Length: 50
Image (cartoon, rainbow, N blue to C red; front, side):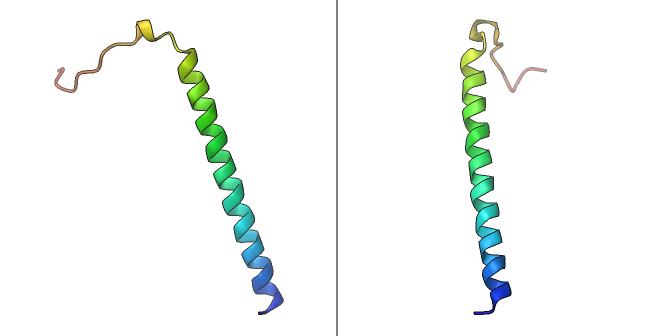
């Protein structure tokens, strides 16, 4: 296997791992923010509302 291909595959793996880590971090942040919301002030959504 050429050296350039090895470096390319390592780079792609690092990018994939970084992306997954960022998505998980943003999901945790979103869950935390949702838990902090005052849900008593939320309006019930009705799609048929004009």
